[in-house]
Structure formats: structure tokens, C-alpha cells
Image (cartoon, helix red, strand yellow):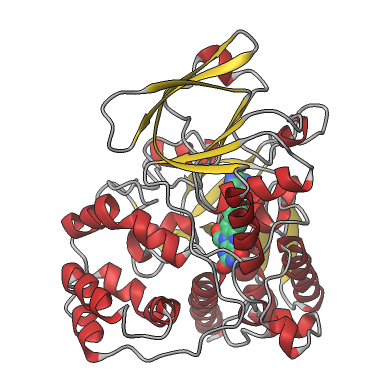
Length: 470
Ligand SMILES: Cc1cc2nc3c(=O)[nH]c(=O)nc-3n(C[C@H](O)[C@H](O)[C@H](O)COP(=O)(O)OP(=O)(O)OC[C@H]3O[C@@H](n4cnc5c(N)ncnc54)[C@H](O)[C@@H]3O)c2cc1C
């Protein structure tokens, strides 16, 4: 069996490692990924030294049955195990465990450092086309391409969109090999669109580079991610009111139960953490209307509680705000255009009907990731969508898939042999973007693929025995 994994970030590497460790001889694993972040992905490959993990080291093992593996790999002390380490270190860990698993594997293991641009059905298999014009056949294909490139920001003028004073992706390198953000002069007035974790990374980088000019961060609600505490809070068990709402898939009831509990529990973070193992099942049971309601009214509040900041980074942002160097505002960017060596923007503050005209030197998009398959410009995902091999979720949460990770076609039937893992599965699972959920899914999918392989081998064996009989 030939299994191809398209995308060599966390999801692709976790799945490839699980397969390499457990697959027998005769299985061929191809891990296809873009050369820049091969084996590390966007989160851990494109990071800078000041960018920190937002999960404690002790909980970040890439395998479901050994959450402490990362901390053990680094041989950390008890105190360091609860700290938030640089993401680059995590990239090294992922890369090294993949190497080790590939070396020891009984299966064939191939790394292909190229972008896959198209996948076509060919009989019961798939033909994978690479950017250099070559192609190969595979029996199973798993899409682990991560989140999709963010949609273009509405209101950005055409001249500005092509000018260096608009940074569409903060970690992108220019043709000169220098990062877009490194071109920003220390005294320039910076407007960041987005107030989430990407904004926090951008501010941390500007700060390290000695930025002195004013920084404004703008989002609809102007909410910053909440910080982790220095010392982890003890875990708690969910009370019956919450469990009942979860079991009944009652979104409004769950919100009511959590609100009632928040003033009572010693730390609300423990409540969110205790919820996580139940969330995929809860989400699966929600109707399309309930999911749409969640996205409209609760998503932004949920995200600032769930995706938290490392405490040192939270303190850094707070200090910059206190000193007036960072301003966080709630409102909408209506328009931005390049005029007289500056960027003129039109912002409507939340709660106001009129817009104000303001000037900045640089606008940086930090709007986080996207999963809208219908609108994406991602070449492979757009090709698969247009050829009908995948179907976009109507709420923009990736693709439609079965509980067994299989992509569904336009009729809702599984496309045999085509799977997805990672943020593309948000419609089915919602919480499937971070390490703790991804490692469980990677283990489950690897098991499923290898069971299929075992069944196929048994059938071949039986067939050969039948042929050999006189
Ligand atoms: C900046 C950032 C920080 C984060 N920090 C944390 C954290 O601290 N803790 C945590 O638990 N989670 C964190 N996350 C969540 C993160 O999404 C997951 O941890 C995980 O990295 C997702 O892995 P992935 O493989 O699904 O996606 P990605 O990491 O995005 O990897 C997908 C890879 O596939 C490649 N690819 C895409 N299309 C193709 C193609 N056609 N051909 C070949 N290759 C392709 C991409 O270039 C990329 O390298 C962070 C996310 C981001 C963006």
C-alpha cells in the first residue's frame, strides 16, 4: 500500500511518524511538503526565537500516549516542564522524531520536498502532481495542508496591496530573502489588523527589533488573548450541570452553566481545559444553525479564552500598553490606500456610526488562519474542490468529511482513499487545530490505515493460497 501525506507540518509529521513506527514491510509512506517548513510546518518552522509555544512543555508530546515526550526529549527540570518554550525548539523536536522513526521503520519512507498542486482519481488510486511537473500514484492520500492562506483583506487599495507598506503575511520573506517585518523602520507608525496570537507575535518581533513608533492593533471586538498563569492551576472535574448540557448538545445551556460556574471555580482556565476532551463530541451533535450561532456570537469570546498567551508575552504586551506604545482598539478597517508616502486608513470604531481618517506608515495583516474552502486560492485545495473530490463546508470550516476522516464528495459519499487531518476538519470536530487534539487524531487515522492494509494483505494471501490449490 502506498500512503501519501500532503503537508509536512505537525499533522503530517505526527501521522508519518505513527505510520513509520507501526507499518510493516510492503507499505510505502510518502511525506510531501514545501521545502521551507518541511518537518516543522507554519507554526514551528516559520517562527522566530521570540515566538513562544502557547502550551506548557510538559503537555506537548507529539504522541497521544506520551504527552511528556517533548519535555523528556529536552531533559527538562520539573520547573522548566511547566514553562512556555520557543516554538523553534518544538520544530527541532518534530523534525528529529520524524528522522528517527523513518530510520527505524520497516516500511519504505520517502520525503518529497515539493508542493503538490493537483490530485486526480486514477482507478482505485490517486495520481499526485507536483510543482516540478512530476507525478506519482498512491493508494491512499491524506491532506494535512494545515490552515489555508488568509483571504485578502477587504478595503486594501490595489496600489497599497503591492507596496511594501502593506504586509499581507508577517513572516513572509521578500525576494531579497529579508523578512517583510524587518523592512519596518523603528519609528514608523504601524497598524496591525487582528488582536490575536499572530498580532502578539508581530508585536514581540517589533519590540525585539527596537521598534519605537506607535503600534495600533485593531479587531472587531478589540479583545486580546487571555494569559496563562505562571503556575498551572490544578485540573478540575466538570460538574453535572455542564455534563448534562454537553450530553444534550445544548449550546445555550452550556454557556449558562459555564457562566454560573466562572465566579465559583478558583481559575476559569481549569474549566476550559476540563471541557476540551468533550468538545469534539459536543460539536458533532450541534445542528448547522447552532454552529452558525456559535460562530456569529461566541467564537471571538471563545477564542480569547481558549488560545491563551504565554505569561511572559502577556506581560510584555501589558507593559507596552501601559507605556502607550501599543494601543488596542475595537472597530473595522473600511479602507486603506497609499497616499503621499503614507497609508491613509478609514476606521470605524465599534459603537460609532462615523468613520475616522487616520495615517500610518505600515499596515500588517495578522488575521489568523482561514479554512474557507469555497473561497480559497490554495492551488491544491482549489483543484480538489473544482474536481469534486472534496466539498466545502457551508460555514467555511474546511471540508465535509466522515467520522473516519474520509473526504466526502458533492453527494455526501466518502471518496475512498482520500482523507484529511488538521484544521480542514473543523466542521466535523471544531477543536482540531492544536497539538493535544491533533496527536490523538493522527494515532487514530494511522491505526485505521494500517488495519486496511492488514485486511488487504490477508485477502491477497488467501487469493494466492486459493490459486496454489490444485
Ligand atoms: C503561529 C502559530 C502558532 C501556533 N502555536 C501553537 C502552540 O504553541 N501549541 C499548539 O498546540 N498549537 C499551536 N498552533 C496551532 C497549530 O496549527 C498546530 O499546532 C499545528 O502546527 C497544525 O499543524 P498542521 O500540520 O495541521 O498545519 P501546518 O503547521 O500549517 O502545516 C501544514 C504544512 O503543509 C504545507 N502545505 C500546504 N499545502 C501544501 C501542498 N499543496 N503541498 C505540500 N505541502 C503543503 C504547508 O506549507 C505547511 O508546511 C499554532 C499555530 C500557528 C499558526
